[in-house]
Image (cartoon, rainbow, N blue to C red; front, side, top):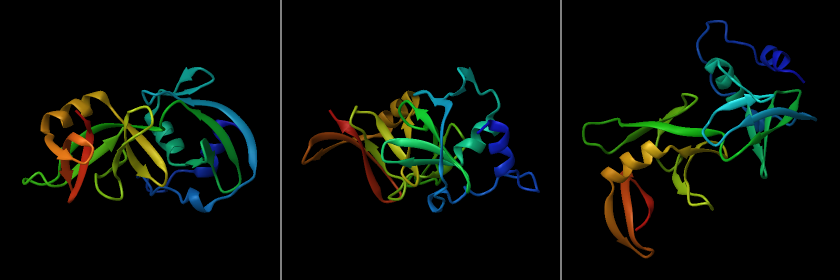
Length: 180
């Protein structure tokens, strides 16, 4: 499989605007091998050790990522190829309050996925102690260090069963930045 063929199969919407994320969870095409695409821990995408320079191409491929067990794949309705992901396929790079009362937080990834931090898109801590947010399906975004520091600035110390934790709230959900 080559990148041109994947691009052709996915196509572009006729109006040129971004489309909805394809329903890759419904696709179960045959496995076609590995492709030398690597997503680094900082969110950079590489093909044959060359960085992707075009964000629209990264966004196209990001729209068809699927995770099965611990492996990541790019899928179309007819093909599935394995790729390498160092830590998470996305990086959470921005956030802002959606309302003046600061009760609903909107977050954004490096591939411009934007959503509300809530029970459907929770914040958690992985096995290595890194903050991760569920973007869609079982795909995660690592929280960028700058975002972590900004959240630490707004978080409150709260006594929990785990001890003292730094917590903040979005969409009526409490999120922990970890124990202190």
